[in-house]
Amino acid sequence: MNRTLSLLGAAGVVALGVLPALSTPATAAPNCAAASAYYDSAPTSANLAMLRQAVHCLIDAERAAAGLGPLTVNTPLTNAASGHAAAAAAIKWWRPGADSHRNPQTGSTPGSRITAAGYCPNPVSWSYAETTYTGWGTGAGTPRAAVRWWVHVSTYGHRQIVLSPTLKDLGVGVAVGSADPAGAGSPGGGTYVVDFGRCQR
Image 1 (cartoon, rainbow, N blue to C red):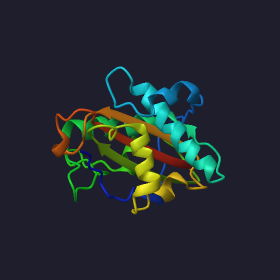
Image 2 (image 1 turned 45 degrees about the horizontal axis):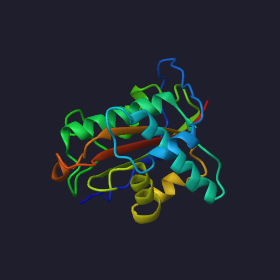
Image 3 (image 1 turned 135 degrees about the vertical axis):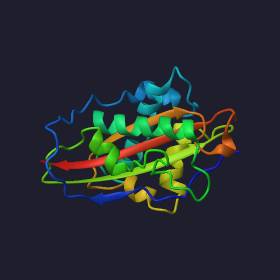
């Protein structure tokens, strides 16, 4: 069994005040030849790094099919997405009707998380978006299931986020287990968060 949330990823252009002078480093492109072996794997404590690459590769493949360029891995976005995925899998608040983008304990939002992580300090302009997914059961908690749902199933704007021609950066977070309490303890559970961004400085 799997359950996904039909919630629109937060997206917007935000004018910010002066932020600390932090860098927004990019990291190397994913190794898609190696990551392809993990497209249908559920998260474990041993494979999270490969599943992050798998999600990135699958997103870039969808973008290539739409005539769009690949996205660049960004460390602050990765840190923000990873922290949110881990919190969601631990707290398990993504039940139907809940806001998967706002942490009920800390009140954090996509914008506050990626700002705190140091993405795009002192910008001229910037934009961001977030997609979330959780699933469990055979084949439902995998990178392929998450990206397929965002691009081909969801009717709440996730496809437009993944295939945005203006967003250039991403960070992927993956956690073991479902973020929906209905999937607690079920085998094959996975929680996925992708934070996207565009930074003009």
